[in-house]
Length: 258
Image (cartoon, rainbow, N blue to C red):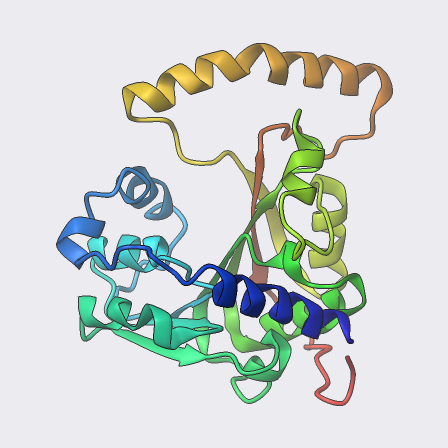
């Protein structure tokens, strides 16, 4: 079985054994979600200024990023994922949202969508892509962006205090990223202006207490790395958040290459 097929098969079997019982919130409920509220404040700094800009999210999950974009007033939001039929309620949130099924893999889905999007978002998706497919998929993301368009990636951080837990928490995780190899991947695929960011600030009391409890562990990790490590970007939290821009480099994506 090919690695891409293995990841899909893991989730197919999980859905068979444990049919989804997740709620299907309305947009009014979702926009008050404790994830969406701080996300709206954070993403408004990096999303396009034009509210009609085409925004694509690959692997939209429960729709928190789509809800964030709606909350900020964006009017052209596209979600792509496997098993869209199980998440169709997200399209009912607004006529600004359209959903598409990814039938085989991300690169194949984006192959016919060259220079279409101003912003592409992947949250905890890239770590599910086998190493041998990383160039293929990242090249497809680059060519799908308009010149000057921005990519935003979120992924578990392999330099965090709980890296092994983040990597091995699911059978479907294929590869792990730290700042240096994520920056390298984006760079060799043509991206410019590559930046690592801190995630959204804690806003609830529970989140703030959690941040305080994590501080000693993060401080110890920074000290250990200063003495022994090769960290690039200075990020040691549980999650890496990276942005990168499609610049003047010609796309390397080729539908014949995987």
